[in-house]
Image 1 (cartoon, one colour):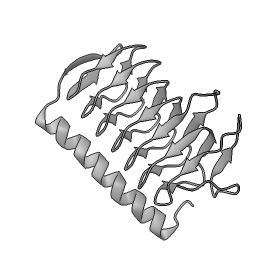
Image 2 (cartoon, one colour):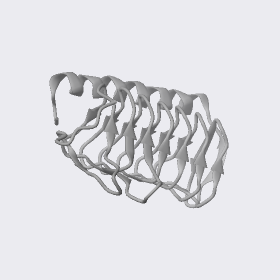
Image 3 (spheres, one colour):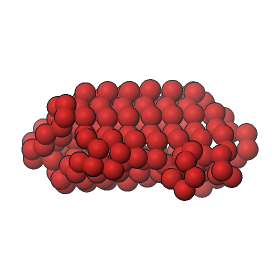
Image 4 (tube, one colour):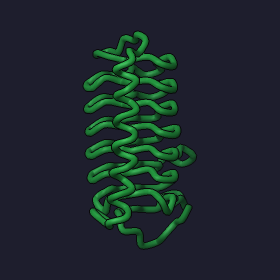
Length: 177
């Protein structure tokens, strides 16, 4: 992990905390990180992503091999390893378990927990304090749950693998950095 005063992306310190980003991570120069933020190995943060760890004592953490796609906001959030967060999603003071996918334009609200190997469908709302059990699909507003199908499990794998590869390609070529 490295902390730099002049990162190629927008970052700010608050309460004495400065973002910490793994050297192998891809962070777009159009991403914004503030405060107590940690980004893990081989993760990718795409343009117009905002990660806020700007409340004293409340970090935002992104595990290894995660991808956070364009126009997404994470605030006081915890993403475990291999999490994909789709375009325009919000994760606000919530936890997303390993190898899960939060779909496009969905929201996971305060004190909610999305278990490991889960899929939050596009446009869905995981309510404050709600728990999505391991291996489940959360769908609708407010979200209901049911076990994942084999096709949905394959989609989680496909998105993770695609963004892991693309993030590393962007990192190596210097695109958007």
